[in-house]
Image 1 (cartoon, one colour):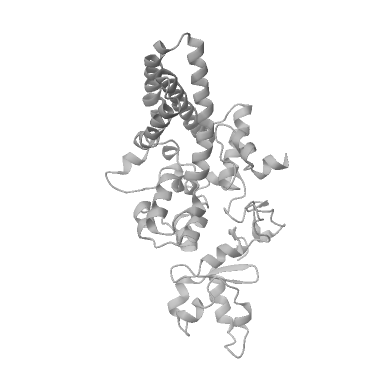
Image 2: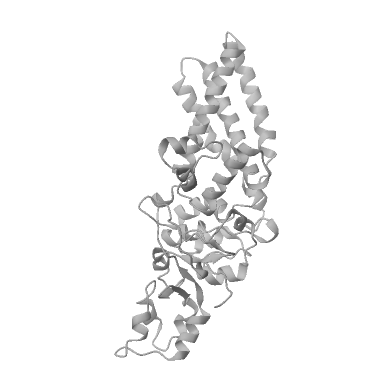
Length: 373
């Protein structure tokens, strides 16, 4: 319909909408959601489902089957939800630029086919909750999200497509996750992280200090710990938080993914879900205490100081992550902000470094803007 700014889809994304819960079809470059029409189709739902996720232009005009009337096209016009991208992703998973298309732009900017975003400002635009749910049949932001994910029956392919299309809850508030007494446990203000963990780091360094000949030696071990954290940060972000395509295709795996990191990509500007809750960090950090004392078994003080340096690196990471999303920053951090927000609205399969892009360069997971420069 003229004047509507609708998202774009790749053919693979359209093909994933092939069930009674979410049924898309295309005619040329137009994408239609016919889910609500399934039970009303005169020939029965199964005839539509045979073409779910496919182009129906030829079958609509096939006289041997049934040449459809103008009324059928009017029904489709009311079901228009988007447009096919003019190009799909390349072999490395990076999406190529869209060609100029008035139906594939927002305010003159090209819409990215995999995220539905055109620029970082889109991350902060309030989502029309009712329209979003009607269009995508994924999650209703007005209701608790956790049970919707658990009972949604989503395929992995559909879930990953939707969870990486960012939404923004009205007014910048937090969407309900559990909707009960557990809700406060899912939210963490940024200042909680240094308040809890800086004293712990300081105490650990204090206990380890007698084992060193000089404060410079201890400082060196502490810096080693911070540097090791940057590698741990990269590896966890890439291979744990973005396990994505190795994710088990069942509700347990999908719900764990959503709780751990998926909700952040789904609602990236939720300021109370940008830093890690203390209980979750304690659970993830505990094995690294054992690892540090296994690797540096010959000296408890060295192992403890390196571990404390790693925890301090985590504090810097969480603070950096928060401020990249929510503050105006000095020049260096503005560059980091640009890269990190591109990870959200442009290419979630690259750009895993948050505090530094160093390991992305080392392992070849730079964002397109880094490669182009």
